[in-house]
Length: 272
Picture 1 (cartoon, one colour):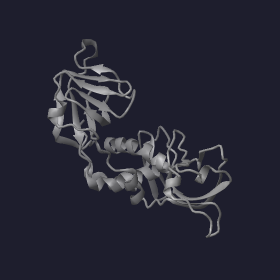
Picture 2 (tube, rainbow, N blue to C red; picture 1 turned 180 degrees about the vertical axis):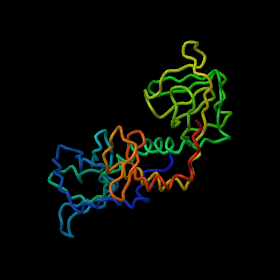
Picture 3 (tube, rainbow, N blue to C red; picture 1 turned 90 degrees about the vertical axis):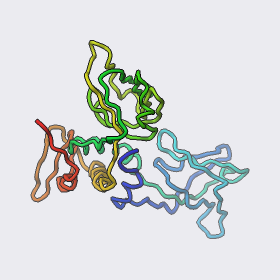
Picture 4 (cartoon, rainbow, N blue to C red; picture 1 turned 120 degrees about the vertical axis):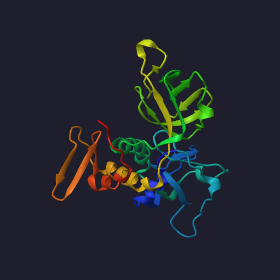
């Protein structure tokens, strides 16, 4: 699993959900569901027909939430009558507009942190280290296969983050499924096709290890995510200082040097 979850990021950076007290949504009789808002909705707090305390207040039996591909939330009538009978309804709900950004940035920041630290927190118990038999196949989804079918025996399980060392697919990957001979990733078309046993594409040894994220890494990753959400990212600068404030760039992404200093205890020496 990831170094931390979206909820943990929000807890560490004290990011609270926004409460919308009222939003009027027209509900024609011919429409069973309406888009409530173009944002992630965490919870519907109240649905009424008017602002007065005596207004009809619907229960959870009258609506449901479904996130579609555009991050809309659909409010649908389930019981008879209710929300689809026409007129308008008032909704009180909570949302957080940053949820999608946080989900996208967590894996990017994890990769940046590991590269900066020269440390992928590789487990010395759950791993395979091979000079032949492994093949990386980009597709929908991406897969890694092992001719010797050692993955289950090694201890890999669905949901784990793994670090790949060697070859063209170096870095962090997340397992969506595991069988003896195949690791299925949660990505699609992210892998470079590569086979250890093809002579013209031979890459030497490759190690795949479970990542054992330390718990005390979480606040630093959360701060890095928050900074990425709020700052631009030049491509060709490694660091800069403005008055008493300095930032460092990793893979073109800017982070406060003060935050990175806190990561130093995890850093491994770079051998040259």
